[in-house]
Length: 119
Image (cartoon, rainbow, N blue to C red; front, side, top):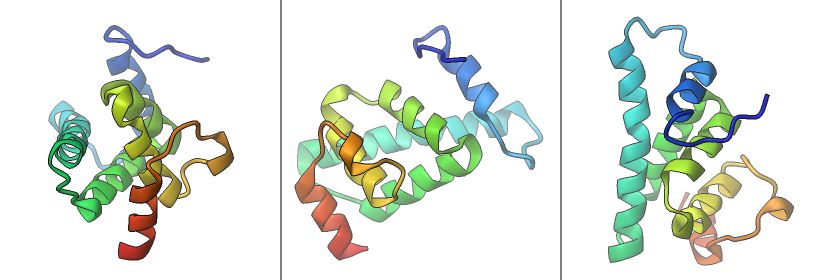
């Protein structure tokens, strides 16, 4: 079943894809969702000030994918992060082998090359 993400369906989609067997409360789930805000903030900071914290962004994306799965993580980040920043997200997704390069329409190639050198 394909769900189109919007404000009404986002929480339901997140709950359906949440796979943290150690989660004992709703607060833990909400804390995991806050990771999206952290990623968004870091990407905005990179876009505006060219201050890149690539390892921190990478760790947050990996943490999200560990509890929501790769596909759901990609979908939720695409929904929550402005489309003008998708090329930045795609550089991280490609570096992590979360997406196939042939399927990407936009990519921050300079960032991707920087990730390959730095990490």
